[in-house]
Amino acid sequence: MAERVLYGYFRSSAAYRVRIALNLKGLPYQYRAVNLLQGEQRSAEYLAINPHGLVPLLDDGEVKIAQSLAICEYLDEAYPDTPRLLPADPALRAQARSIALAIAADIHPLQNPRVGKYLQAEFGVGEEGKTEWIRHWIRTGLAALERQLAESAGRYAVGDAPTLADVCLLPQVFSARRFGVDLASYPTIVRIAEALEALPAFADAHPAKQPDAV
Image (tube, rainbow, N blue to C red; front, side, top):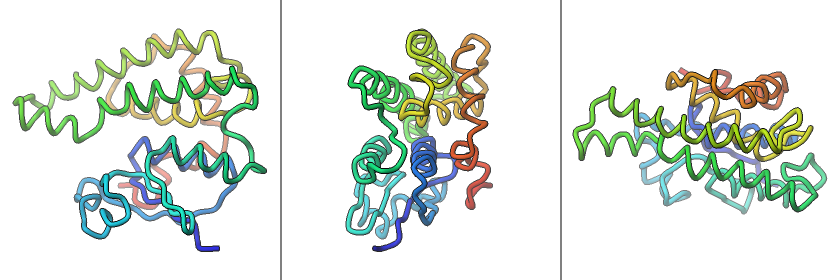
């Protein structure tokens, strides 16, 4: 079988999710850095394998998949004998997906660098305004998640085993801290994040531990 390759960028929350998922499932991979700041995602070579020009991209032999949640669900289905990211119970599985999507679809896109660049280029938003835009949407999303997690959480986001919800939650907490969001109002999120940070699969996926970290 061809070597499994993950294309990513150390600080990308979406790539961070997939690193966690691969680690949780014990699936080895080669990491291939795509420097977003230098525009490598827009190179002809990269666009040939991912026309969206985004990270992450998983090359699993003859299968190439973009979008972090699609990759995670593929890993769950393609490798069913490894620890599952989605619970067997339909209600818990839906809850894990709900939390993951709230992060990946509602919060993360509004903090994406290309959104910030567009705000600056097209609307003259300064650096401070761009940062406050990001903080506003992170705070709004985390406030809703805090309420949701009060109902679903055990040790982790959905019960007492890590799920797809946690795979998305810890990278979002990393981003919140990076942009200077005060997390004091989200005690459940902070508690879960601290529990996740103690797990090797999550700790080893941290951006600072990646070979392209600067």
